[in-house]
Length: 67
Image 1 (tube, one colour):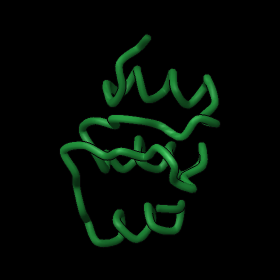
Image 2: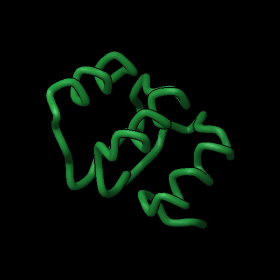
Image 3: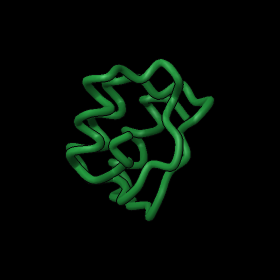
Image 4: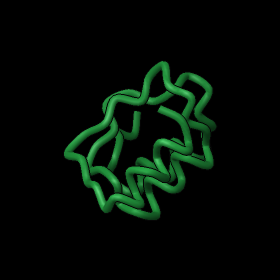
């Protein structure tokens, strides 16, 4: 899934209990859109290159564990 895929899901008004985003093309910008649009309750795994800033935002939103 890419950022365009995230935008497509948002456009379809989809919501997911959880998402596994490891090994996807989702960037920090796409992850921020997930937070803004409350696309999921939980993210199981993030892409390895996710910034510390976005990890903190996800933790504050309760979408990931803060560890």
